[in-house]
Every structure is written in structure tokens, then in C-alpha cells.
Length: 552
Image (tube, rainbow, N blue to C red; front, side, top):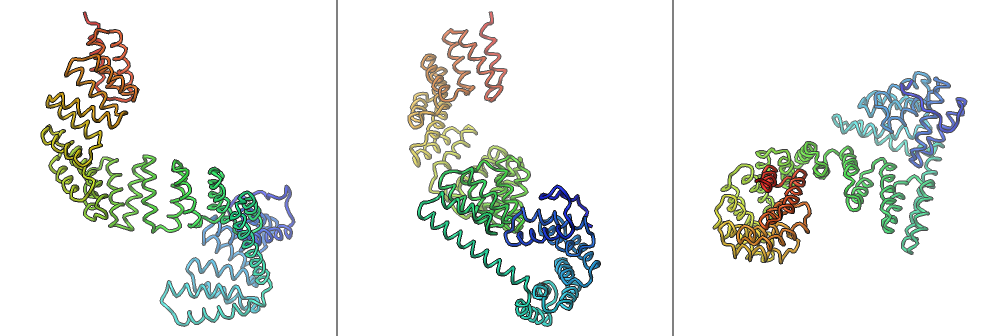
């Protein structure tokens, strides 16, 4: 018997008679085969189990239940074989028991034993052996793929295909199923055609209701759910569309086409649903593990969740199937940076750059590599060399020049920094950040007037540039001793960014110079409080300035 808890019969509070249970099970089984409804599947399984509880010697319940449970992923092939052997043991003259046993043996790879079971089934009912012959033909063809090719097996397969097709006319069960399938296909065509006509006539509500009606009357529920989703999207009912796509995926048995449609929809309308996207990409990978793009997308989703280890593993799997893909190399390098594995990241960035799929893209990757060399490894020469090579690749040279200038600024070569900031501005005269950085370099060289000019230019280009306001205030406060004018710039910075710790600190300094100690103390305290949440400067320095206000 099946070693699992017997589900409660969903249709009755009392036990059914054995024959009644089997009849209900077979009816639900037929409906499931026609419509692929999960409700019918559950009902069929429950009724077959109920029939076995009432009469353990019902052979057809064993092999039919084994088929359903295996298709549903609830038991493995070995368990299915065991249950079919039980059916044969109970009734050795039941051709269907032998056919099912042969089928599961063939899935297990036991082709010779499977062939014997099929032949036994054929001998028991020769005129009603159409299905058995066709399944045997497929088994023989599958055997030729996995074993040494045999002309005898191939010829036998052709014979069983031909004879099975001819005997189809003598099998009333097959004919009934065939007719029902034809009727179901016609019903599907009818609903789909009428629905599309209604959509073209802009009668979306009627089309939606028609598709909803088709869900209970055809086996193509997943397709009609997608149709309903399309209408919901047109009406901007995105939550409804999402539910329809989810049903479409579930009822299609996670068909890859339905899964891809759901992914495309969620990425466009619900990009924040990271977990749902991860689940869908995982389904695609389970269907076909050799899809590097799925691993690549999965890696970025894990990065979005800050799950760095899983991101690294996903990118590695993408490279396992496409080792020379520069985009996959770049993404793995970025993930390594997040894990502070900089040596590995450097090698991956270098390999991605050597492949150079696109000059502009490579120029961006070069900036990432240069940042590691400069900021992590302290190798400014290597960083500058990488960026100089990037200049040869890109038409948009301004950010590269600015990156080189930033390195020269950091190593205190201010003249070279000013030179390259000017190169950046020659390429893009509307770059507020370059003007701000140039102003800072001039300030470091005590060229106060030039610093004021370039900070003012940065603010003209970007009126919300809080850093430029703050730094310009510093020049007026510390360079020109004009606390009142400096205060106005600091307040502008705060208006733009209320949590700007350094601007609050500088306002306090301005108040202190103006002799307004109470206002200065309040601002130092504000800066101290904000700095605990978003550290920008040394808290001890703020405390020292605060206590110093009231020293005797």
C-alpha cells in the first residue's frame, strides 16, 4: 500500500462503497486528462485511495494512482514500479497493469523487462492493445538513443507504431478519448476566437468574462488566464493581471513560455517583487539547468536582496555554461567586490575588458577596475593606466578625465588634478560635479576667487547641489571671514538636505564666530545627533567644539 496519510474525501463525509469510489475516481481521472485541473487531480487521487482502503485487492487503483502520484511529483519511479507490480500480482491477466508496469520500467531504464511487460499486455488483449503498442514503440526508440543502436529495435518500433495505429479503431476507450479531445480542442478554438473578436471590438469586459467562462470548459486554462491578464493590463488592473499570471504558471505545470510571460510582466510592473522573480527563474532553471542567462538574472536579484553569496554562486553557474561572456564576468567581479574579494574581482574585470564586447561598456568597466586599484590597492599608477586606456575606447571622455583628476587630487598632485578637471569640462561644460571638484582643487591651492567662481558655476548648473553650497560657505567662513554670508550658503545646503551633518556643524561654527553661543550649541547638538545615524565626521570633534563654547 502507499505509505502516506490518506486524505479526506472532499465530496462526502462518509466512506464510499468500493465500486462507487472507483467510479468516481475514474470519472475524475478522465476529467483531469481532458482539462488538466488540479481539483480533478486531487479528487481522483483521494477516490483511488478510498477505493484501496475499502478493497486492497483492486488492481486498477494501484497502477492508476501510481500514475497520478508520479506525474504530480509525489512519488518516485521506484515507488510507482512497486505499486504496479502489486497490481500485476493481484491480477496477472490485467493487460493495463502490465502496460503501466512496462511504462514505469522504461522510465527507470529497464528496457528489456519493460518490453516483456508490454508484450504480455499485448498477448492478453491483442485487439485492444493500441496504446500498449504505441508506448512500446516509443520505448524501443528511446532504447536506441541510450544503448547501442539496433536495427532490430528500430524496425520493431516501426512495426508497433503501424500496428498500434491500425488497432486504434478497435479500441472504444481510445476512440472516446479521441472524440472528447477533438471536442475540447474545438471548444478551445471557439472561446479563443470569440474572445479575440470581442477584444478587437474593444469589448474587453465581455472578452474577459468569456475567457473566465472558458476556464471551466476547456483544458487550456493557462492560456485563458494569460488572455485575462492581457485585458487586466490594458485596464491598468495590475494586481488582477499578476494573479492571472500566477494561475497561468501554476496550471500550465510551470510551462517555460508561461513562466517567461510572468517574469516579463513582473519585471515591468512589480520589479520590487524580488522573491517572486527568484522563484520563477528557479523554475526555469529546474526545467532546463543549462540556461546561463537565468543564472545571470538570478544573480542580480540576489544582489538586490544583498544576498551576496547566492549572487556569487549564480554568476559562477552562468559562467559555467558560458565562460567567455564578458557581462557575466563583470557581474561576478562586482559581486566579489561586495564580498571584499578584490583580487578575484581584478582578474575578472581584466578578463572582461580583454573580451571588449563594446567600447563604451568597456570604458565603464575600466572605471570600476581603476577604483579598486586606487581606493583598495593604493596603486594610483595602475589606476591611471587603466583609465588612460579607457580614454581610447569611449567617446564620452568627461567622466574618465574626471576620474583621473580625482586620483591626482587624492595623491595631492593638485596641478595635474586641475589639468584633468579642465579636460573633463572641455568635453562636458555642463558637468556640475567637475566644476565643484575643480573649485576644491583651487581652494586647496589658496586660489579663493577661482574656487568661488567654480562653486558658483556648479550651483548655477545644479541648484540642488548641497555639497557645493556647503563648500562655498566654508570658503566665505574660513577663507574670507564672512560668517553672515557663509551662514546663508550653509542654510541653503540644509534646505536641500536636512540630514547633512557637516552643514549643521558649519552653521554652528558660523554662529560661534558671530557670538551667538546658544544657537551654536543647538546646532552642534543637532550635528552630533545626526552624526550618530549617518556618520560624516568625528563625533569627538563635535563634542569638543560644543564643550569649548562654555569654557571660562
